[in-house]
Length: 501
Image 1 (tube, rainbow, N blue to C red):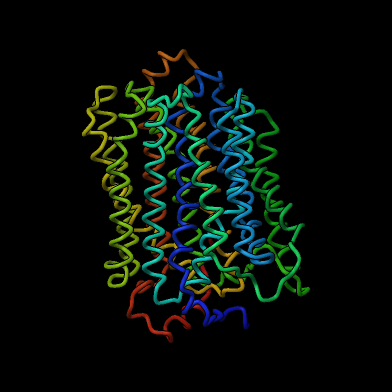
Image 2 (image 1 turned 60 degrees about the horizontal axis):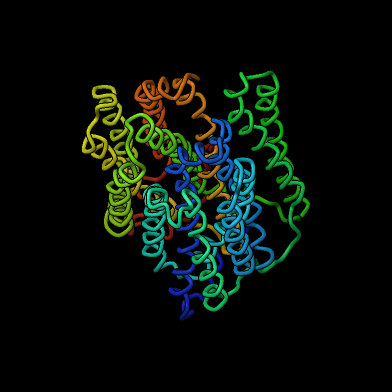
């Protein structure tokens, strides 16, 4: 089929503004990556200031990831249909406005609502980043570009808690936790101006209508799964939570059947299912989901453990994460520029094992020392974890999109971002079982005593997920990502059946 052949657009080879455009979209990616984790360090301050409950705290952190995940596929497809630059700028404007709403929120309910809408705006903005990169840069430059992208994402993800800590402890203008959202305003305004000037417009050559039925089925299926996971522990697991999770299966199955039917009728499906016939795409999405699950649990549990369990200040807790950020950036650069082109799939598998080993080391130290763990002991396990994650993040994104036609860049990018964000939303929801369930419902003092136990229990889960990612990566060809892969080999791989994701 013609859709299986990447379209070559000669204009991408001569666009003199592509590096300036890259800087703009990377700033947007950085804002999103920071906002996923920046609120973690502010959780105790938000609870104290607004009186937020445990369920509200989970929604303030997980609600963003949930609406982000629900809207990413739609956001990516909107870029294909109506213009990636146009939808990107709309997302930046909405993200900036909702950051203002979160920053001036006077109650936990308003903050929660602001975070939910902010996630929806990010769902318009973020898929266009990978789409714009994919259609703007020629293939020979994409390795370097995705290496930079992976480093920026790593930096944003792990410096989010540090930025949050600096702003909360600094108590800028006496505003407490509010500057963690208000800091997005100048970045968002600058991104709007610069994006208007330097980003070139692009969209699918054959414009079609948005698949509204697919949008409803996909959103309903994911919401039916994640909502009960988030609320179940707080409400005592009523019958409706199990009914909702059971209902998610036929809803998602109905989504797949509808997409296939729409494609047979010559329509424009929300998700181009033929992309999953490519092994790199199918396996990559599965590994992305694993990483989302792991990070969704780890970062929330880690933040509360350091501050409430160990009594560390937000700044001390944030600084302890800097080695994780540095290791992720180093791993991303090494994997794309040196290791993956030479050793292929083995590098990604080594990264998964390194991340799992870091979690097991942290588990041993937390169990051995409890609340008396030293700063250096809390830092050391983060280095192999960060290095391992960095070895996977950048090359995995490149492998997923390497065989995607430009016409479906938005759909593929949206789905790629959806899998990891949905994984994070489910991970935060599962923290009610693997972390908050062990923590109990006692007084703050009693919970603080149980914090090392609860944190250690969650690390077993995170290590197991990284190990599962290691096993999944065996489904990739051993030479995936290497420079020695010939066009003939790539074409042969495209026609091999894809594993079940």
